[in-house]
Length: 528
Ligand code: IFG
View 1 (cartoon, helix red, strand yellow):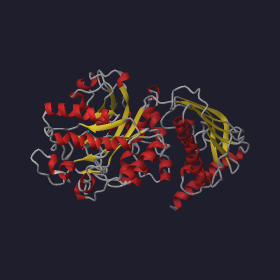
View 2 (cartoon, protein in one colour):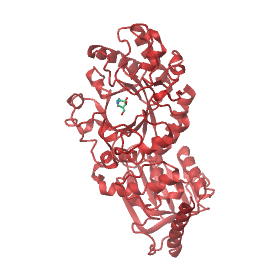
View 3 (cartoon, rainbow, N blue to C red):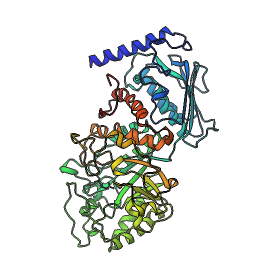
View 4 (tube, rainbow, N blue to C red):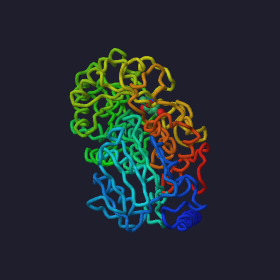
């Protein structure tokens, strides 16, 4: 720890020296100041992930956050979050003021910014910082970029020495796709609210705007349902390997939804049907065709379970469960799974999916399903989530539906990086950072029209994961790669540039306590 602090101090002194040598912030950068108008190695306009649409530094100009800096925001939640973060690491008061300050930071809903609700324009001058947007989501996204222009220490949970300089320039930015998601499997292993919130903080930093929660599977049911209470109390009582179970109460789920919403993230709940249902079948004998409840399952096989599609109670169950979850979910999507229904006859699967989708619509939501769902009739608004390991699936490409791209061989964060990776599986192949980055969601699936791609998702299945450290080791650095594919214009797609920008995230993750994998593909800076 001492070494690290000494290093940070050294770096900070170097930056301070550089800055103090050019005391008036508008002076030309001193010899010590790295090129690119940055406030330190890898901190600057050339280090933002995801890559912005346009970023133009103003050489020699920078703004220094000081004890005099005030903050104004047209979106109170965004302003409070950012001011709180700055106070914690700078030790400055960072007061929130009632109008844009002369010397400070302004987050303004001016409108007139190209690129929609999530677009923003960021400008840094010697006098201050201004983020403009059409909607609060755009201000939130602009603040995530602004955070990456600050020294790494700005993300510290404890007060660090400054200086707190932000390089001058202008960024205009907006997303390529509207759906940019992470998925967390809380069924194979349960993760409490605090762990989910921690992951939300981490994915929000990369402008991910949906979190898909895989709430039920063979090994566990993780959300309380009032009309079927044993689902959570019994069906959620264990986990893979016999590890401790657990479940979200409705209050827990509402807390996650609110926390995510304040960070521009929409929750997409998944109840996997008709397969992956052993936890439900074990909880209620009447849901089984033979009236006999199977034992709870703690292995990691798939495809052996199915709801009884010939019993009416099954559809009452499905409708009541989906109804209770829809009532808790402000977002537009209900994910009903549909994957690996190997124990459901195809005709029964199609009939079941028709009725399950009618329930989703009946509860006012839009259905999402793993891509097998296209075997059934689906409403025009249905979204298929592609998880194949190849670039060919004509049924999906020709289904005429929106598609979320999450090819398992590119985006499954539970795949090992290499054969030595302690955690994870290998069935979809090994995925190093370059594999996660070097593909185009808009052209990946042969025959799928580019305009049918709704966006991307990085699923993280938890058969082999138990802690936040495990989540972080598998998600970082690959999740930012998927986040960039979802956000940045494809013309910015360049592995050599990306790996350098990704390297600059390393010291920040170190500051945040993110337990990331130091891939040998990335030129991490010393001390990260
Ligand atoms: N496939 C299964 C998941 C999970 C995964 C692990 C899907 C859609 C393998 N289904 O991915 O439940 O077991 O990598």
